[in-house]
Length: 384
Ligand code: DP6
Image (tube, rainbow, N blue to C red; front, side):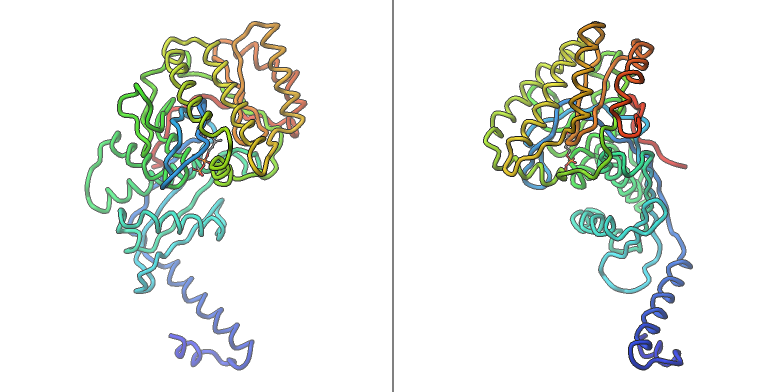
């Protein structure tokens, strides 16, 4: 191939010649790639989620140190497609092109390659075909919203769906979601919780039948109806790049002096939260959810090295939320991810009172007044 390329290139001496050969080869590869016949394609939309009981600390191959539970979101989602075509070479390695927002993205490609390598024995087609993944998010990349949950769950759904299609096997929806949750977890722990409508629980929990460290389970049936339409206004205190990646954050729990107490607390909080979710006890729900958020941040403050993930705007908003709750007696509570943005949670029936409060008292603390008006959602769907 190289000799052939040299022969066909008029000027091939010195550096210019090498560049010309490189370009020629690249163009040939591109031409082959762009004319390659797509054999099959699958596309999924999958939402992000917000944890009520936090996953913070892991072991083994992406196994959680404590059970976690989350609301599935609606407006914050990823759309991902996976297509397979004939390989351009006999090379046994993975052949992958990855596009984010229609542009080839090499940093993401490397992450996806290592994810695919790790699970390729379960998905032989990954080595057999040339793969192309295209992904986009509904929320801006710079909004400070973690995209790994929606992105990895959408990709896991594409993988499981593609696998079934290539084998010519029909797979029941609940089995597909459970399998996707398992592989999404390997990509990113919280992604395991993004595949079910309304709410999911991940991690072995005492008294929760069917719960597992390996995949999340649907939790909609265990919820009072008020939670099925719960609102989540995401108040963007800062859209700056995260100070600490979740990967590093989980790692820090290995030496955190309070780790053992924390894992017990998470289990205790879950045991208290479950009846509140069932009965619709909004006060109990809110108290536990806020404690979980504050604990997550406290853990980061006492890790070695330590991190403060809130900004002055986060603190100002928390103070106003508490004062408004005190004076209005309305059940609005907040939670936080491992970052400065606030997720304000409230039932749909008080929306007309909470929205003006957010606009009048909180939006001035948001970066460029940015708020994402999200709510509990219906889970992933196929894109036709
Ligand atoms: C604070 O799922 O992002 O959002 O498994 O390393 O990808 P990896 O971590 P990730 O951790 C999420 C942490 C959290 C809490 C939660 O969602 O439960």
